[in-house]
Image 1 (tube, rainbow, N blue to C red):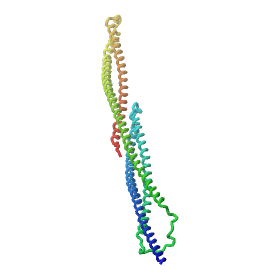
Image 2 (cartoon, rainbow, N blue to C red; image 1 turned 135 degrees about the vertical axis):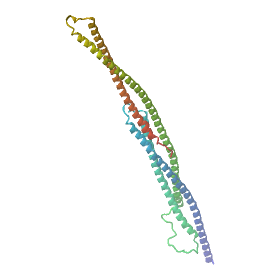
Image 3 (cartoon, rainbow, N blue to C red; image 1 turned 90 degrees about the vertical axis):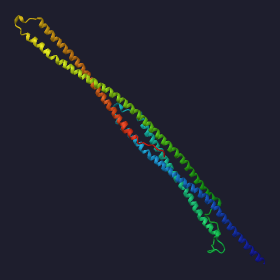
Image 4 (tube, rainbow, N blue to C red; image 1 turned 30 degrees about the vertical axis):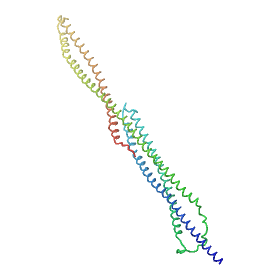
Length: 364
């Protein structure tokens, strides 16, 4: 009888142990499900953040690509303006603003490249954290399947058999605290990377806004300088053209005056020839008739008057021709200056501003 009681107690004890094991498995399943849900939530949040950061990376790439044309145009404007000539080949405000624009855009490119590198690295870190979460989840799903199978086993389940040495603790197993710490570490790392990613996106937003504003502001400064310079050049060219028109009118007037002086000199030729012929002919008077009479003195006086008049006319002609030469020199200088201004206007107004009209700095 005592043996029967002992066996009954042993049987009941085994039953209680089995029930406790089953309950332990159930609790473990609940704990595992709770941990798995937390991992799954963090994974979903991280996947969403990776997608968001990839979209921000695309914005940075587009913004970087969009700097190429404005930079090319600014550099081309500098090259074009090297074709200015003479006094217009100066380091003016337009030149200073163009150089500043090149420096601004190159600075923007450097900043965007650094931001792109930082974004690429953060995406890598996010994906690494995602991989760790996925691996942890995969292991937990594997363990969950095993525990669910074990929880469903009963005395009459198929496939039950003896396993020598099954009742042991595996050398590579971990304690519950380490198990929890491992998942917590993955979750914390994922959250840190997600938060860093969110902060980086905020930074990218600010950088994209600021770089667009900087480029737009400097583009406006260049255009204002160009328009002012073009207006000044047009005004100067107009004044030079007005002066040239006056010089041309003066040249025409002087040329007409020269023609009149030459005609006046030519008109003295026949009277001079007449007077000299008369004097020469009267030298042929015979003997005492070769008298210094009033006619002789009058003819001599007449020749002197004509010679004096011709000398005065020739002197005036020389002075007038000298004035004409000076005016022609002024005309040539003015025409050259006008040509310089016309060349500058073509470069600044047609070539440079023509290109700059295509600049469209957008927000990305």
